[in-house]
Amino acid sequence: MGRRPLPRILTASAPIARGRAYARTAADTATDVLYPLIVVVRGLRGLAAAGRRRWSATPGERRGATLFGLAGCVFAVALLPYGPLLALVALMAAAAWTGRDRTPADTGPGEAETGRLQSLYDALVPYFSMAEDPDPLYAHGGDWQGAFSAYAFDDDGRLTSLELRYPAYFPDGEAEPRARIEQLLHAKSGRGREYLFDWDEEGNTLRLSVLAALPTGIRAQRFVTAPGETVLGFTDPSGVPRTLPVTDGEETRDAPPVVWRTGTRSTEPHLLAVGQPGSGTTTLLRSIVLQALHGGDALVVDGGGTGEYACLAGREGVLAVESGLAGALAALEWAAHETERRLIAANRARQSGRPVPPDARRTLWIIVDRPSALSHLAAADGRSEPQNLLHVPLRHGRTANVTVAVAEQFDALETLRAPVRTHTRARVVLGPATVDQVRAVLGAPPHTTPAREMPPGRGYARLGAGPVHRLQVPDTPDPYDEEAGEARRTAVLELLPRHTAAAPAAEACPDGEGPLPVRAT
Image (cartoon, rainbow, N blue to C red; front, side, top):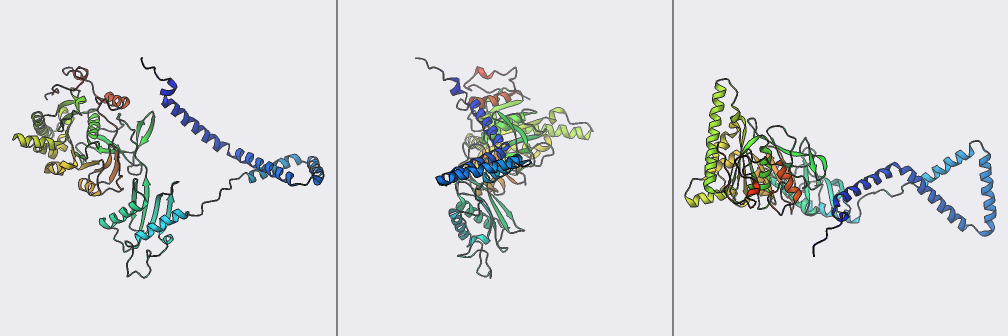
């Protein structure tokens, strides 16, 4: 028996959700506009209820006299000039006063919140106190109110922000004492969330705040950037001074990007991404390639041999996609010679006073995923080290308009050669990692506490000697991966350049088998 399709009312969940959002927004707006009327109506109901209670409490023998007195008052008001109008105004004023919001103001933390603050204060005493201090701010059995100047809790009673003062003799300029305080506050305030620590050395204050999770729904798309700019991902609004319009689901909004600038004037022309398996380093490289093909050529070396870059084979601007040892060595050797050719061409053009030839100005991207796997195969086969072939593109790539992006896993980080470590000044760490691991790759600790569970593509980025940013890589799955959603794969396929005339179409080999085409240059 064939399956009957679900009714449209059950399958079209997006319009229903959108309609609910519109209805909720309209209700909130109507509530704000009609709030005075709501207060007056609530007050009239209160006055009517009070009148009924007063009438019920009036003895039966006095109700007649009461009605006669009320009738006399109404008659007298009706005879006065502007009497009915003044009576109506007085009634509305009494109703507004009766219907006002009488919710008592929050005068301070509750019993449970006070216990949390006192426990946090007691935990900080060993770190912020000295025996020689005559008037200690932190002391055993002391009160937290003198140390904590501001605080906030959520509906569950968990701390969301805290501002505390600490003694001037605390070594807040050293990394280790600050790390101990941050670790303590992280543990006492609740794990599972990301905290931002803002140290004010001049004022001897520390501000703690809970960061909202970065959005994971921004898919691969054409970003509005200048030539030479690549969007690595998106971060907190307070971390960068600009925003980009992005499509998130079915709506368009502004998001703060982490922009990596390459080219002849870039101070960090090459990138190194490190992470655990499944952390999203391959997704990051795939996103970079899709943006690079908009105005440059790309050479992709897949050291892992997983076929994650098969969608790029035979596309315009893709010079080669290599996953075997022999092909990878040949491609990297060609890249080294091409870098030298570009240097010579640019030098001759400058000496003769002519502009650099167009083939030397067009950006060449060298994408290498997991070079340690190729190094292991080369050592076993007695061939030259593939990473040594990256020395020329890494050292002279900025002048020759050649950009190198390398991705490696943490367990093979020590196998990276000196040229890769030295010349990749743009760094990215994705996936779960300790503070020491992040510091080893980025050269600086993260400004937030790493979360226990991180979605793919979540991590930290640092460009040169700049600050450390939280990062969420755009969702860029393999379009040939059937486990990925249809909308996610379609977004990537729409960004791919068309196939070259000499290359077979992707539909001819849906399984990704067969040799990948290489275009000689």
